Image (cartoon, rainbow over all chains, first blue to last red; front, side, top):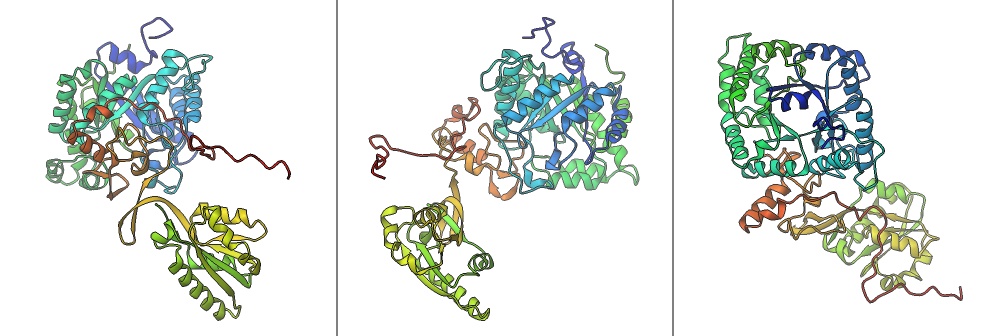
Length: 314
Length: 226
């Protein structure tokens, strides 16, 4: 696959961790709504040494933020490995390929290919959504650039971007029966790793991963289970009611409600850590993707409690 | 059919505020059926404009006519003599008709009185739902007769995305998820293999103005005498 002959597709830290069979642990960082580089650096400090790679979101929830490649570069300079997210909503195939080349030139080695939340949710709700290609086609495009050394249009590339290609999977959105086939399509398109939607409904997730195991899919792709600790009862209720494709069982809310006053967040972290313990043992799960939204400073505590430290050196 | 909705009255009024003689032109086909720009709507607009301009002490002389199709040269001929008496034309046809009118009478300003909103099905009187974006490469053969280009808010070709919410689209509970419906229909017909295959990036056919000449036909020769 690789032209470097080392057997790696990109040689990113995340790829090496996964290939060595370690249980991966990735984090997430949302770029600021302004040009404050120091804000990115500050958030990154909390994540350093705690995670194998950090997802840098791309205009998440369709709110304009510092570009994901730029914030990726900022954390790269801090000694962290970025997982450069790219959504199909904001760029056509020309701009995407240009940014993939630029990202690679800057030393970015992982990327996550996403459709993107609809622009209606953001701060420019009447913007024109691009969706020139979709997330599955984006995976195929990056793979073509990396493995065939060709642009989507077919012309030869002068220097190929070595990317470890990621994508998302939501085991909870319906139709549930189709979700594992959608995963299979992403694998056929060429994805190397998957990060799932935040998991709360463990029973449904176990069913989904079982299907993926039965179909042999987990032998072809690394699946990182998505975990987001609940900070409060309000957050749990909001996610249940307002976030499309999110499955928050009533039991999750009840358990948070049962926590002592002032200890709800601690209970949320405890629940997340219990999940992580189960994922460590779960066949087909290669790691955890921790989305501690605007809670980056809590990541060291969560990583410690989840017993995923120290991160392996590869 | 092509559907349209009337523009806000004040916008129409503002377009023609400096004219004293305006011809309001309806179209008897699509926009008449969808209750936006047929004979009846022409008369309603005429009455509203007449009243509003009288109140402004700026009376307006109007003429009204509804022709069969504004997108067809055969019917436009009827207007050739009539338009000479007017300073401007308000067209209540779809965007095609408005442009065709403006092209035929290049010396007279033509203004739109409706906004064209797409190609829709008539679900009940006055209720229309868009069903086709005229992308130029019909996918309905493998999507169970449901158009993701039109009905999926992201126009995805390999859906459904992760935002499907109890069969609804993430943008609105009232909007069904196209890919959920496609899945259901194909499952019923035992045709899910149709969407297991990856649909490669689309060669968009609608990025330049399109001309269509049916097989066996050709563009008329240009008159060399001119």
